[in-house]
Image 1 (cartoon, rainbow, N blue to C red):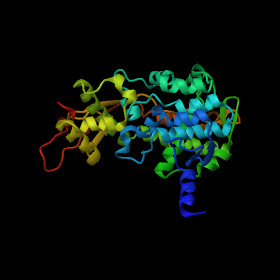
Image 2: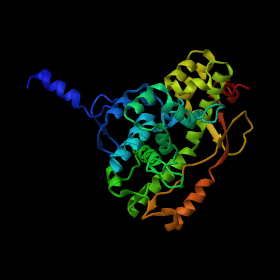
Image 3: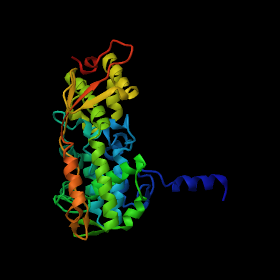
Amino acid sequence: MNTNKRMDTYMKDYRLRLDGALDELWEPLWRRPIRLFPEEKALLRSKTIRRLQFVRHGGASFINTHHTYSRLQHTLGVFALAAHFDPDNRVLRAAALLHDTGHAPFSHTFESLEGVDHHLWTRDAVFAEEIAAILDGAKLDPELILDYIDGAQRSLLRNKDGVLHADHLDSYVRSAYNGGYLPVPAGELLRGMSYRDGHLDFELPAGRIVTGLIEEEARMHGSLANIGINAMMRKLARQLFAEGKIHAAELPQMLDAHIEQLLLSEDRTRENYEMLLLESWRIRVSREQPDVAAEQAVLHKLYLSMPLVDGISIAEISPQIRAMLQALEQMLGAYYVWLEKREGALMRSAEMLGV
């Protein structure tokens, strides 16, 4: 084989591609090769799904934590689980690829802003011309896909039973992998899992590991690092909204980079955004209102659905886990966020908060 032909073969077989260029997809976290159906290749090539590679899963926490992966990387992890446990269910597999398509830039960071609703926008994306044409060509029912996405059709993707599902599972495992605290390879967890009656089920050792990851993810969401940086990013987004630079209806088509471009295009927002990027250590967070101007942030919920072990919630098996869940609930509520005064300068926290 000549050099050019060897290189051509290598490039075609390169397994880290995630853009639908190949007939097979390699998912690196779960380490699963997935043979793609034609509609899945088309979906992966669609602008609707490609956009998710440029939307950060953890929102603004990419600035000051290891939570740096994209919505598309998470989506492909969920897709890998669907393809592994229910390989012939093409509707479920399509739903796994489409389940996060309604997310705005910076994901949940902007969820509390008026007019932002990623659930509604996911429905819009499924019925939009680009995706609808792909689904119609494959004779896949968009309403059934949406039933899988919202949990009305119980499956490993989502459910309304309060049981851990693949969408959250991938987030917990992926965050742990990125953060360096995943205690076993994801593939080993997979061997301790099964799928029955529309739910993922775990052997006890795997269930305990996953419960630990759920606790870690909840503590990340309730951490001062996560709450503070996202509160400040929302403040900047509100300024863009107030100045008419952006409207909620535009968000489902936008990338993180579009928001960053807007923030960097004006002197005032550029200075504040660069401060977030380069001086995030100045952000302070407290449960008690400080004696300086502060932004209020409210932690409304944590994702605490528990895994099943032999069909029973692991929380019913372990008093320690029930106590852990009760302790985590204490993180919910209001927080106050402000900037520490820059040493040697006159700038105070009120400058960032616009008061």
